[in-house]
Length: 159
Image (tube, rainbow, N blue to C red):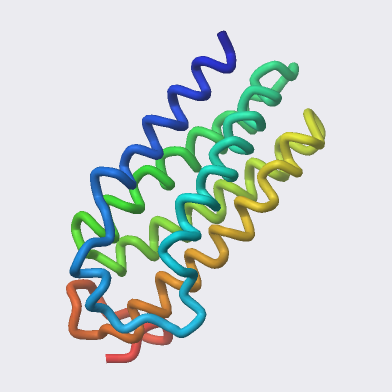
């Protein structure tokens, strides 16, 4: 039962990437040379989703995991929302705010899961690394495309 719930949640969240795809708009943006190739995203996310699911089950089965599960739920919300904000609404500013909250919730999960299940916390380390790359890419694309929709934030985005 635990696995079914977490698999369903992760697949539901992952579906946002299917609804809000990069498309022509994203292809037309100026991106840094270090942008991962398109084929890397589904491979990396497939691996990460497996770890996110497993970590959620481990913490669910542990005693006293309410705070860690709260962070797990928060990362799910922020991860699900990012594609809609960045690709769907084309709001790189809101995407950056969201991915920042995602990074914090992933870190929060790692910290609070560690005493309950070291494996669950370790399973989130590649996720934290990938979200760090995603946040850096989000802001790099935002900075390179100042005429796109969004709000300028001094010190982050030059206009």
